[in-house]
Structure formats: C-alpha cells, structure tokens
Image 1: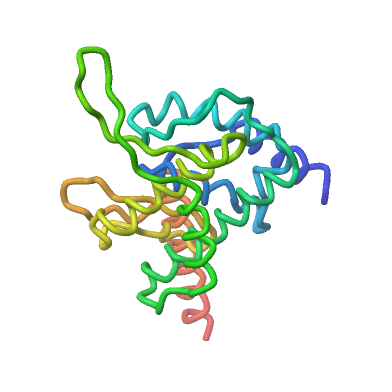
Image 2: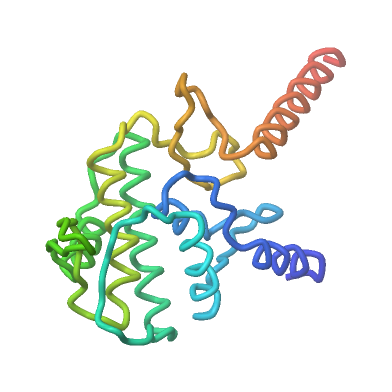
Length: 214
C-alpha cells in the first residue's frame, strides 16, 4: 500500500461510520468501503467496533431493546470475527434481494444462528406499563450481535424491499434504504452521485472523441 493510500485509509477509519444507510444493519455492512479502487475494512481491531458502538447509541436511540445482565462487553479479536461473519451474511442476503437472486442458505444459517442468541420477553416500566424487549442468552457478546441481527431482521421482513438499494456508483459498494417520498434515490450520498455522473460524462466525451477521429 502506498503512503497516499495509507493516509486515505487512515482518514476513512477516523471518519468511521458515515451513517448514510438509514438502518443499523446496513451501517455495519457499510464498514467495508472502496478507497482509490481497493476494498478496505474499517473494522480492523476490536477498538474500532467499540468506538462505533458508542456512535450507534446516538444515531439509533430507537434501536431494538435488547437487555442483558450487568456485564462488561468482551471486545476481542474472536468477537470481532463474529461481527464480521454476521456482516458478511447480511451483505450476502441484501445482495440476493437487490439482485433478485435465491437467498444464500449459508448466509441465512449464520443469520439465524445469531437470532437464536436471544428471545422476546415482556418487561415493565415505572407505572406498570408492559413493554416488549429481547433478552440475550449470552451477556458478553449477545446484546451487540442480537441488536444488529434484529435490525436486519426487520429490514428484510418488514421494510419495503424495493427501497433497499446498492449505490448506483460502480465504484461504491455501500447499501442504503431509500426513505425519500418518491423512492427514486439511486446513490448512497451526493458525493457518490457527483462522482458517478462525472465518470459518465467523461466516458461520453471519450466515446465522442473516438468517433470523431475515426
């Protein structure tokens, strides 16, 4: 990796999670990015996930209510690999839906394995009102994995599937859920839209030039 690429990758990690997708599960998928034509992973160490988790608390205050026994989360390399395995499964299933392919059974098994780490329950708040919650069977890792899996579960089963998209920019691999009124959004961000259009116009000019000299 060149020094320039190293700086850009480091900057991408500092920027961390852009939260462009509209869904927690897709934000996890989008921790794999393209920088100067190469694929990079923003989750290189357990600390990257820990830092991202704090941002999630701010961006998704209405995330699924998953409760746990009081226990510190064990941020470790094996835990990071479990998160990446779940990320890969969600990416595969989203790709299947967007491209109208049969669902990948291996990815589905990985996904269901994580969902089995929790169960629905009822709890009450002061005043006696009952609220639906999920409880994690494994306290040190389950709440994080289950929260992500439940986000994907709702996205894949309850959301309008025609609003799930992969960015139209050929040089981008990010997914997003289109919440616009008309449902016509095609790019993950304005930056990607501008870059995609610039490339398209450049190719048009090049093709026009070739036709002219021929």
